[in-house]
Length: 397
Image (cartoon, rainbow, N blue to C red; front, side):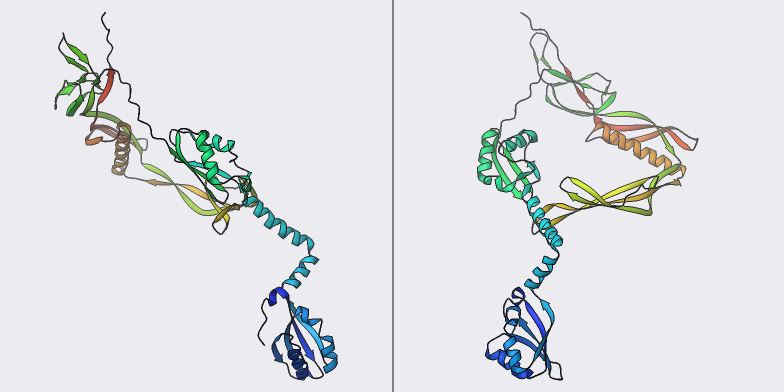
């Protein structure tokens, strides 16, 4: 006979029937339509079979009629599991409380984040959200529908043209689209563009104003490059000088590079600390004690618990502390010079901005002393040399 449906839910008993007329006992079970399956002869007038738990209590008349005895060998299914849990009340209560705690924590709002805002500050958006009941440690089921919340927040933030809310697990994301506004025109006073260094002009482009210098002309610091004064001495107009002026500038650097370079490397020794993370709190479970490492690096990994697509505010965090050791390696004098030159070039490019080009270099002086290479280097650099000089004038009566 086939195994009945929902047998695990109803409970299953495996029993051994001995003595008497075992075959007649099985036939009587079929006549009474009592489900029995996996009947297996054991020899010596013995057989093993499976029955549903509710049918076991109706077997006594059939056993007496056939002269058989029964002995239950195994029990399985939901009723027996409940019975075992009943004998372990504290364990059952702990399991229930654990799943209840997980459900309660997943029903809370743990994080509120804002995206898309530029002129509106994050604090302004979060304050509007708080006034509508959106804040950390708020119950999700207490919040109105997302469409209603978005409309109410839009009334509180007139500088926004659209607000959308999205809830993923315990995180609420507020997406803001700000109302477009015409960019205010900057208020500029009349000005000259002057040179910020001694240089030779390589390129000049005057968008507004009168160019005073030409390409290949040498200028000194403070010389006017593009004038903001138009016209002659009688008829003059002062404007905001605009344009771009580039020139060759020479920068002198004093460089020192040690012949013994130091670097950090891992020794292979490490220790781990394990934490249980509950929201924004971490409880250390493993890895107590002070590390004996003089120098070390720490790598942190966080593994949150997930349920379907939800990321729960509970998880494990591992901190791995790895011992490091300082290594020293000697470099040649030529390699030390190259290291120093590359660092100086990187400093020039970072200091003088985009478009700066290093066209050449000349070592004026070099020597080796106290384990270092010393150099005085002159770099030829093409860079933007224009800076603003406001025009101050008196208006006649």
